[in-house]
Image 1 (cartoon, rainbow, N blue to C red):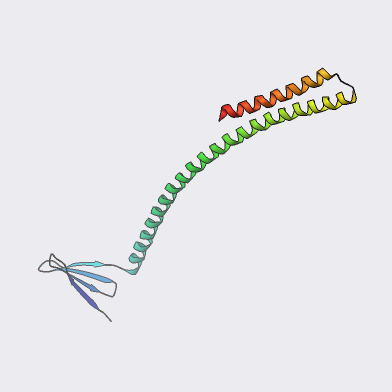
Image 2 (tube, one colour):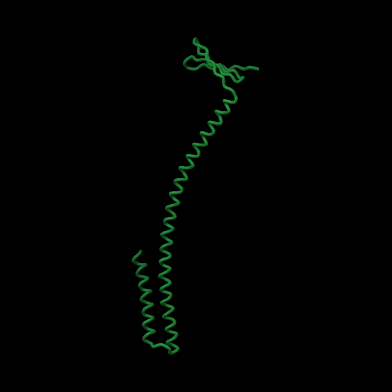
Length: 142
């Protein structure tokens, strides 16, 4: 069964579509033009349109990915700076703990009578000075 669809455009071009894989374009008062569109051609056009959309989607995805990678790099740089500061602080705290341990051992030795009182006080003063220096570094960095 054949069915025809007739359309008329603004320029008086009459389009007749026959639904058995053929399209006829018949300008009024002019030459008859014939164009055949098979299902295979329509399928290829559909696949081409799909590939075009897929490429556009891939380009959009890459743009978003580039922005995300740049943002991630900034975060990683900040994390690296924070890690370096934490490592430096832990070294300072380690030195301070060593000084406190030294002074505590000298106090215990002084109590036992193995060390003079002056050496114990010197050790305590040195540990307090290192602690004070560490606090000043914190205040200067802020």
